[in-house]
Image 1 (cartoon, helix red, strand yellow):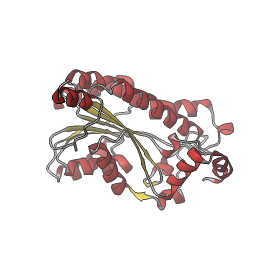
Image 2: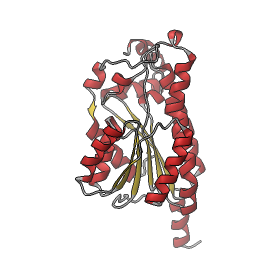
Image 3: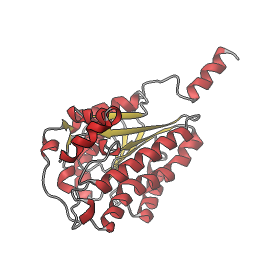
Image 4: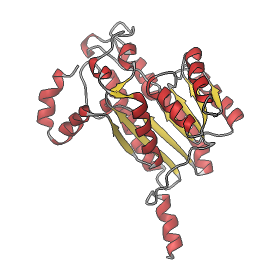
Amino acid sequence: MSYTEMRSGYRQIGYFHHMQNFNQKVVWITGASGGIGEALAYAFAREGARLILTARHADKLNRVAVTCRKSGGQVLVVPLDVTDLTALEAAVVQVKTEMDQVDLLVLNAGQSQRSVALESPLSLDRALMELNFFSPVALTKFILPDMIRRDEGHIVAISSLAGKFGVPRRTAYCASKHAIQGFFEALNAEVARTRVKVTIVSPGRIQTEISLHALTKEGVEHGQMDKGQLEGMPADLCAAKILRAIKKDKKDVLIGRKELIMYFIHKWLPFLYYRLIPNIK
């Protein structure tokens, strides 16, 4: 086998990594109206990407779009509830019509929880699984065939540190993020011999409104900002780290500060994890 043939084969299975250039690339971000999604929109806009921004609230998306356009980028605002599969499929048709293709899909839409399992109705578990797991899987299945056909594309699943180990008062949220981890790890293996890439990002405590919008046992928003969120990593710094990881074709990325210690405790000192985790709030 010649060197050229070896290099081609290695490239297919990821031995050679090249920093991605996002200029004029079409980037679709769900959950783009706030938090990490909003910060990513600004970061990609500065890189010259052509953006598709999705979330439920059109007014918030339009506010983000105005800022992105100041960087000179093209922005398509597609408001929708990603759990509505009919609307999601229609959005895919719209995106393909107006943008032709999706080069990078960032699956960021999601919601957390603040209620113990004993008091939480099954409807809460189902709602969080629909939003946090089934909707990104559905959108992936709508977009992936075209990426495979072109032998090019990148899917980024925004999971959570709670997808690595269980955290009290977040049982359904943890379950949905563990499911994300499993699905996209397996997908990465399935596309390994193509040029389609998969990155799983697991942020820890980031300065967003995730705790404000977390669901209680009554199915309403928690409405309180967690101390950990207030003291967490700024969303723009998190977005910069995510961008860097995507450019380097990282497969599984942890982003956070001191809270990441619990990941390693869970992995290497499980007895200590089981002593400490009941005290996490």
